Length: 305
Image 1: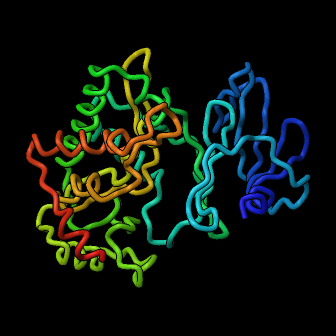
Image 2: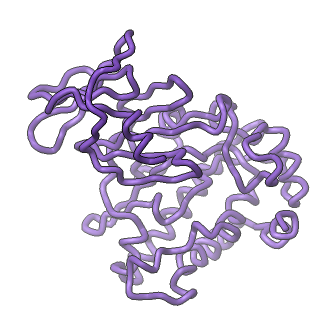
Image 3: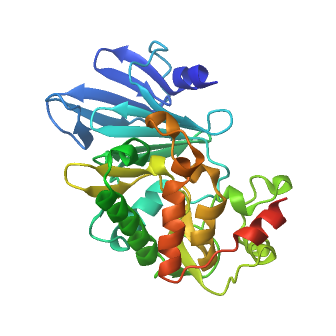
């Protein structure tokens, strides 16, 4: 599936030009022009949208795939110079698009939190394309075993402060920042797959035991792979804002309690025990509890059984 998507997604015209999704030309040249970014070696990549479908080119891509996720490769990211180019097959047309979220959150974030800047976005033929700037640092999976206690505590405090800052912004329903659907899979039953309508998420949230009168903004996927740490400057950034929106306040801490994706990757360190794997999310649970966030983890597991 991945190889087929790569071939459909990008074809090579020559050494400095590629066709993306039949409608975009990615070119490399000496000067920035329009929607462009550095290739990291003195030249620039530029994206130009065309009105005609381009079917020429060789089915070959020499840009590395840095991430693949989701059933049937729903989500693929390429490393292209100083930017990432993401291909997403959206869950539905109603789901809030990531570029809208990234543009909206700039005024919500603490000053010390870095996020990607949108360089280009487009959507056609059931596929969503997003080019974003890179955020400095390495993932928390890689950074955690190299961090001393002070830096670990600082990282937990920074992400806790982020949750607190975002939670000050309230919505009228469980949705994305623009009122679109929020693709929070944990708030759906298996038979509801793909239906993220606010009314369904609200009904399920109440069944779990959450109070839906106050809906707070939240990045619902604060897994170690989405948290970047610059060990030299001790700064941090957050990526992958696909699943971010207004949720019941209790969900902020609950997600750290119920999501196995919050575990640290033991392959990135010499530590293999369960205590190490859960260290990040355990510290986040305690930190959030200290500033008044509650959870409904027990009732969630009963509801999800």
